[in-house]
Image (cartoon, rainbow, N blue to C red; front, side, top):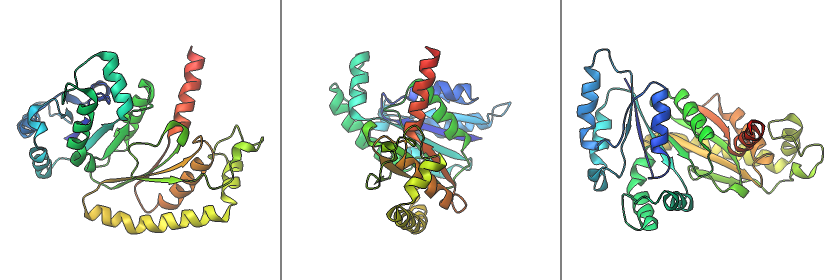
Length: 291
């Protein structure tokens, strides 16, 4: 039985995630107290026909969760079944706006801004153990669905994951990044007319970025550091590391450098690559055509 724990900040999209997971064939339970998780999983194991995939939303709406996450961690550590934790994050500003629009009470405090801060601190231990962290700040529903589906497709038990991403500073730094690298020090292909409409995945842009010797040395230094850091992270029980390259628009320099690092690391580690702002741009174009 594959077990997925869905948690994260209130308003970040847990209910929407559960609907997506139901469509993917998961038996889903919302707002399950951590103390009941073991009994519920035993019930699933003894059900005929056997339950193959279970998704459990455990968050601060359950009063017992407010005081301790030890019960959940203890249950997870005793499990023989493969399990992952999906953590949904979002910026404080966007969470505040979502609550203002829906006029709902935050589960942690009558003051929404205070509730967000309390909950963020409360959930930090479980975020540290998450297999996947998804920042929903700039996501529309279709991109959110695709991101969850891609994460589930990559699920492979307890293997450490190296996630290499690109982004544009103009849309903000990804909240789920562990390491952020500013690559705006090198020449910008945007100012070359022949390259402007291409991306860092296109060979002309890639070669333009890689012709800078400092870029090559930077990438070599990063790769060497990761080879030392990842075993240390594994020893501490960390199951993912997300390194994010940022440039101005998230289209040229950051994309090229993320691609280069991915090619360097993919044969040594369980590495995946994502280009946040290329996805956002493609989704916007698709919506224009549909509209």
